[in-house]
Length: 586
Image (cartoon, rainbow, N blue to C red):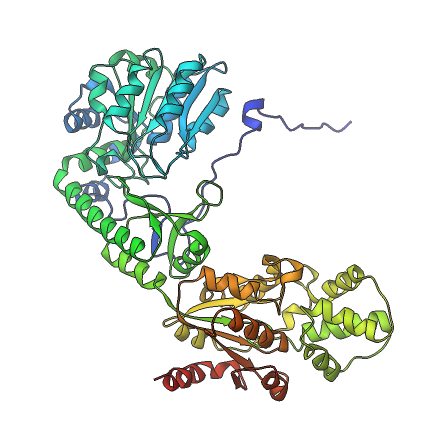
């Protein structure tokens, strides 16, 4: 009988939680990684020199921590026996929670805040209580105290100041109030970002044996890749924490690099001043552009970009700048931007400033679909009618302006042939021919527009896409032809309700409201539905849009009859066309 190896489930508290996943590889085409609050200025040159001159003993022997502990004691003016080195601030939180928490206990904090305390609590099985901010971002003291006074299970009060991702600090008045109501709790204060502001509570360990301070060398001293955190608390707590932490969890390279970094105070002050200057500059720019940045005491800015959040995120990503995007309330439409240097600031400002907007349709405008969509239409038609279909019949159907996509067009033509087939079956057959999980005739398509033209346009305009294709198919082709990076905002079939597809103006309206618009909007399409959509939009929005029809199907007269402002033979004429339009305005 064959042995069966069973999957062994973890304990229940672990099975129920979601892990904190980290990328395995450095992001490609990223010049400014501003999504994790690392210090992009890098560490002190003293750190670099040490790493360049590593000693064999630094690697082959277990580490000795005395020199590093002495460095921290001197820098923060504490005693050696009040310090415990950890493998990053994450391990510091884990060790503290595992030392003091049981499944019967609870942790009290605010929301939103750093996620790892929640995960460590859940692993233990402790209740993790989050008091939401009522006002962005003022500490919700009254609600916090109500929970603190009434919940007897609270064992740890976890506070982060400055807080991530909000950037606010807890004032001394609020901190004292919390401490006065927490004499039987462990108060853990995460000061990962405290060296960027003038508020630290490390002196509290002299007066309160229930206070634990956690710091990191990642954000301020730029040692994120080496992983070093530190716990400051009374000597009695340190003794107990040492019972839980793994021996030698901090490697010698991180320990010695920390000593080097702490010895170069002037370098850190210079970096902090540069970050403060760049932060003020970026804050003022974002505010002047009508966004809502929040005052930050850390090395990042949290900003509410409203309806333009997706555009700003994608625009920066296309420009090789990676920032942190939040999807869920209360941070939906918020981006967190690690403060770059002045050059990075200027790039950010240039990329998201208001510009004229060009909106491209996809099929027949960017991509030749004569051997893909047309083929799928013809084969779908033949499958159900046993008849051949001509290009002319397809073009005539498109020119009605009433068909949202090629599923509708196929259904229309099949009905016209006197065959009544359930639309779902038509779509299923069409997709089997066209898409086939990325293996269909979609791969017969060719690119119409020269990518050099898109590159040139991207310097003067924001570029958007408005297509009736399903998202997966649109993104497949953009990726296949390596032109996705040029589109700052995209609207596909999946982004609109079925009754709001072209020629309804909802798609254009979304683009208009979501992109940093200035002066003029240009919409380039090849179908009657595109031109009707543009005309409807202009009637509502005071004629700010210029409709440019592409004569893909030799239907110039039809496009003109529906009100196209300009007709071009091929999309590659677009730069010359736009130059003529601009010149005619002056």
